[in-house]
Length: 253
Image (tube, rainbow, N blue to C red):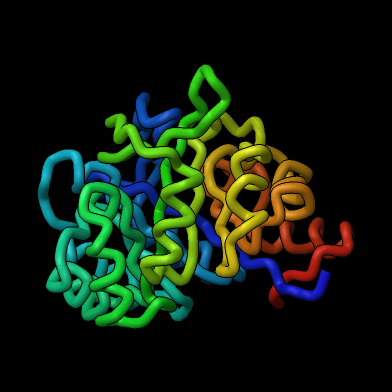
């Protein structure tokens, strides 16, 4: 495998805390955003994902002061999502230390915003964030507002459209698997990764190290977002990278 896989810890933010949702519910406080970000940076994380999980739901903006206090301590790319609804919001996020913004809720209801944002800041700055839930008929629906609201939009078709509009990366999160630590939704990853020409980040469900390798080898992910397994000490970033190297998966130093 020639590409270097990125290992990306994910911080779900509610108020001043990092929390861990299980299938969007049952929030548990797991620590301080500043302390966890610094810990993962020192462990060798390649990037960081920072998601305010209630900003869209409550129609409020990100806490940019909190974001700034997190990004000023670390020197790796940071993707920020939650409550991004305007060019001004993206500007604020970038000025607060973000390198990329993840757009979900507002993009689903206003697809042209993806085009406008990618034209203004460049595709490399815009991440299409898809929270998908498997439906009884086997299709996947894109959900909004922190994975709480139906959109009626087919997640696979939305991925195709979002890329046509200019998104430069896709963050694929499985609502069914998120927080369960039972492995990623490989079928969901496959359905999107088989046609996209931009990097795909697998998110939601990381369990043991083998489940991460499976998302890369079978789901064809270019990067993996991990929260619970890191937060609760199942393994460290360095331990995961060592495991993946032993599985002949190229990772960044």
